[in-house]
Image 1 (cartoon, helix red, strand yellow):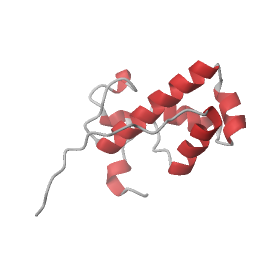
Image 2 (cartoon, helix red, strand yellow; image 1 turned 90 degrees about the vertical axis):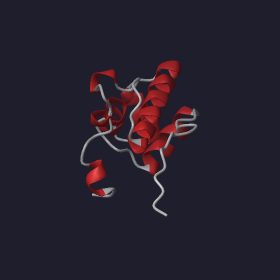
Image 3 (cartoon, rainbow, N blue to C red; image 1 turned 30 degrees about the vertical axis):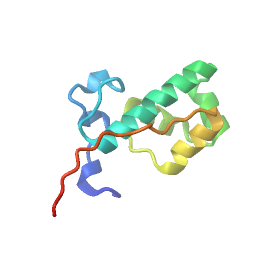
Image 4 (spheres, helix red, strand yellow; image 1 turned 180 degrees about the vertical axis):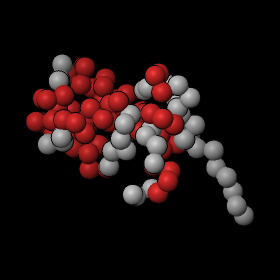
Length: 105
């Protein structure tokens, strides 16, 4: 699996309270990026009055892949996010992700 063991757990599982997904931030920067994408997508779909079925048909992204992204059960790839962003016309990418950098040198 790309990302190795770091992606063995879903983004949702990497929050302190998975039930609060996608509102609660994650200490893991990758999981938090997915959380922000999911939150932005949910807002875009709601704002445009789009169902998962309509989003899937319009973006050529599998409906279950969209549902899994929204629920924090998957690590979406760049192509998936790009297709959904293009279809909705909304920015889905996070503006920034807080990363605690650990220097090794």
